[in-house]
Image (tube, rainbow, N blue to C red; front, side, top):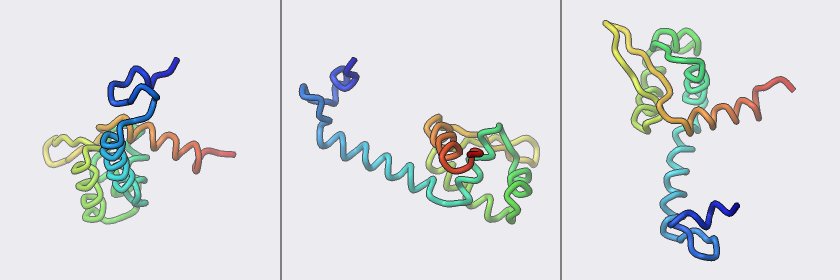
Length: 114
């Protein structure tokens, strides 16, 4: 089944409209830039196991709270994580299924036992 033909942004010959392709490429580049930092990738990896507090992430990553908060801020700005406050603690969770799937693929390609 040709799924491209069912996509209204695609021409009859299956080609993606060039303006739409540019917009999708920009979205993909922004997404990949958000992932292109070792610290942010590690945070996302830890969050695939469930919600974590900033303190938990600080200990898991072995870096200072300021560095963790800076990376979480970027991930939150990009919509990849969400946060909630419980008293003084702030908890983060994955908010984007694309991030979850991408981190899973990265694990499979780079981290899984061979």
